[in-house]
Image (cartoon, rainbow, N blue to C red; front, side, top):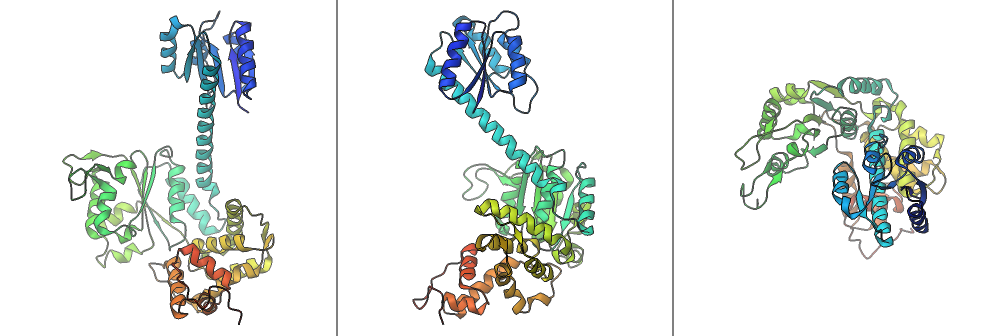
Length: 463
């Protein structure tokens, strides 16, 4: 229930306003002077203040300028006679939300207060979301008590206050973007934008326009101006994920931005100064890419002013229990489930697994287990289908290349191949991968794989 404070030196006016607003479902409190109203505001922390402009002693404008410093100040509505409208307009320049002219109309009062309450709800929601965002990416919120992750967090604490370029390296699925966001949201730039681009996911002929933008007429189809990510990230951070996949021509352009701190849109004639912190990430070994001629040496040293190396999950297995509990909580909220935890035997299976897909793969396993579990505790049957596919195909002991692997893409391809080999009979494809039919269909839907199942079988195979 929204709280309203009414301040007017006329008792009849106070009583009428209180009756109207309580009739609309608001909690209304009154004060006969600005001085008393200020004390009431400090005590009640209202959503809206409805104050007369002219009163004995402190005026409504003086009251507005004396409001306590809070994360969100109440929406302030002034009531004024027609002859003092100019003063009310001036007060709006000082932060008043609205003003009403006397004599007051009931509908006008109700509408103005409703709009003020809606604005306050939106402001409070935005502040709460921002707080959740900061909490999510605060250093202490990164899950990991292993020695290797504690070392990572120590580097993050040291690097966040400085405006230096950071290079994050690690296998696919180790959480490089999470670390980049933690650096940003714990830095002096946290109120600025965080922009991210996956350099490996954008076609070579489009990545320049994504990063630098373009002017109308720069090329066929460029009918309007486009602001690039470097400009969009001004006063904030630009995260260049998988920078090792950038073509050499774009590497040269990125190097020039780092040196000159300015960009020029495609087709543009003027350079634009930018204030952007660059955080880059890669699953490639850039030290080997440089002598191979696939990555510029000068750009490499520009990027790795500070380097953060993320360990693969198989090297920090002591963090698995905490990660599992974190993901259970996350997907309980998302799916409306009440899973209390994981059984000892299930956790043992997870601890013994090799995790080629790292944290991303672990999250996928727990996501599926929370959704599909028939009890309030995750059991071995809830995770074994997810793990068996890799175990039975000999992937447990596979050699992970230096550049890492894309586990989700590998899983997607296995699902497709199983469907082709089984002539699109889902039950047969599920058996090929050692999965239950239910689990197989869940994975197909998760990856958005088009399944034109044969007439033979679109239901579990009973044989």
